[in-house]
Image 1: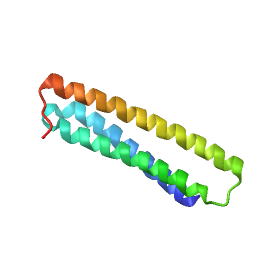
Image 2: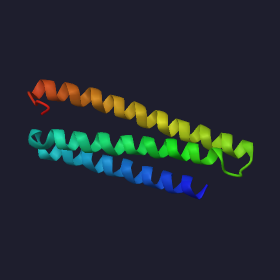
Image 3: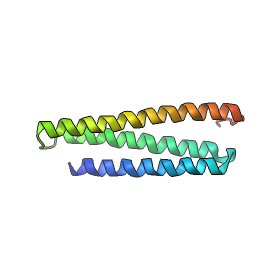
Image 4: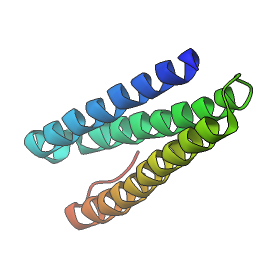
Length: 105
């Protein structure tokens, strides 16, 4: 269970860093857009990986089944929200790059 809490803490830090990167993205203009885009995608993807690792980790822990089911359901919601956010972000950045003539190397 302790490992799961560590994974969740890492995921929160990665999502927080993604928000900071999004704020910077708006300030830097187009010249660093791809750099910021890549950072956000990396950190949100890492948060998804951490959530999956947490679910995998609690499957073997010695906690009762109702607690395990509750934790898994909440982590699944987090994974779904992060996945949807990443999909929306990717859609936005693809359109933004196309409309501003930003080419991915």
